[in-house]
Length: 252
Image 1 (cartoon, rainbow, N blue to C red):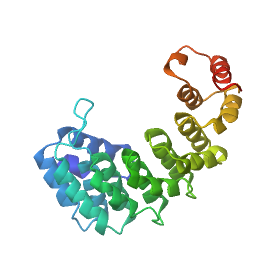
Image 2: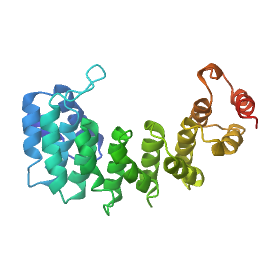
Image 3: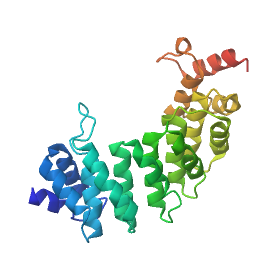
């Protein structure tokens, strides 16, 4: 156990080796791992605090067991960390952890960091709030982050509110429409999917034009499917078939 925890501190933060150790600790998911990681969240070392939050985030989670082994305790530890942390690295780890643990009490703690000067922290907020995209308290922050100067932040905020979330309002649809000409392709594509989910017909000319291009993103097909009813959808439809179905359905 000492060796695995030590490995999480090696190399650069995003290197594969320390993250493989973190994933190993997730799989172990024991009381010992929880207690040690919680202790690291109170360390004087920023990297240890970050790794403690990384470990706590997904203790014991698997495809067959999608919840944290110690959800209330892990939430308590990370919620304290996210409120007192000043260093961007452990703060973004704690923000990501709150999103992964999935306790809705995290929402107001996350929104507090929506204006953080570090884009990586704002990105973490956008990602984490995507796990609470149907919580009305998340909407204002995600709407603001959809206009962020950082394209990755805009992308994940648009994906969270528009694609993961099901909430609908004129404000949300208008925000998605404003992203239709975003400088980042991923943001533009996510906005089309979000508008398709909400049947916003302003997006149809843009979508039809994209479906006529030589190379077509899977997101454009997803957007087309979202506009159509289940009986109009088919796995083997070509882009041209979708264009024809959209034109017929909406009398374009």
